[in-house]
Amino acid sequence: MADAGPQAPAARLRGRVALVTGSGRGIGAAVAHRLAAEGASVVIGDIDGDAAARVAAEIATNGGQARSVSMDVTEATDRERGVAIALNLGGLDILVNAAAIFVPQLPHDVDLAAWRRVFAVNVEGLFFCCQAALPIMRERHYGRIINFSSTGAKVGTPALISYNASKSAVLAITRGLAGQYGPDGITVNTVLPGIIGTTMWDTINADVGPMVGFAPGEMMADRVRRIPLGRAGAPEEVASVVAFLASDDAAYVTGQALNVCGGLLMS
Image (cartoon, rainbow, N blue to C red; front, side, top):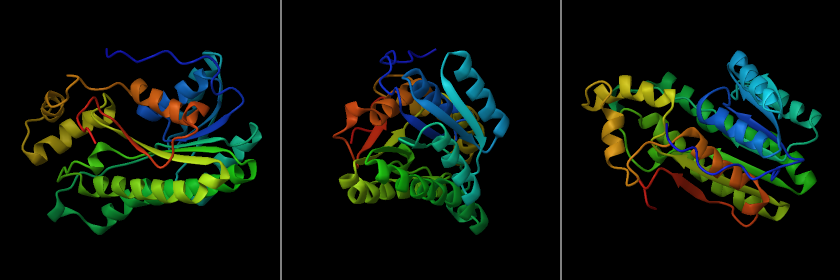
């Protein structure tokens, strides 16, 4: 198993409340665990309510505070519910937008319904979660928003063209929000994970790889061979970067896009 990175600084986020979308599994779950380990109260939002409840229970077992909510980020009522639960925990200081989907299709096979579904979650859901959180953060004159893009926004994969386009849009949203709300004490940044050992990459290996010329299971190995650090990343390593951006250690960092990819990209 990959080194999970540095240990969480004790109580760096004590007194903060975070809402993490898409946190029922994978990188989102690792982020929720890390924020809780650093002292934040965390709302676990996921379209799979059972998965969200499991993560919240794990955090509670480890001594943290968490609540779960079944949350489809494309639904305004679900976004409002997630924010309301955060307010019941004491406020909303940190928003992490990790919810995302992809539909593997080569460019000539992309259909409008699939394109719209990807953008509904990855772009519209993310933006309107930000919109729901911003009034609270502006009133408190404090906020940390961390949006998930992907190195796919910078590296073309034909069979993931709708996903990669949506993740490029996240970069533009982040810059726009950072410029507008910096004077309100709110920072907005993006993390771009690279090749991370998650079930998402299991699916890419099985379904996307053969569409672009790889034998089943070989696409990830090909990508890893290009990484200077020589391995895939762990979800916990992405979570450590998110925790930094969520903390006061990153008070002078906003509008930035941080690649978390072992050197696969260097710009």
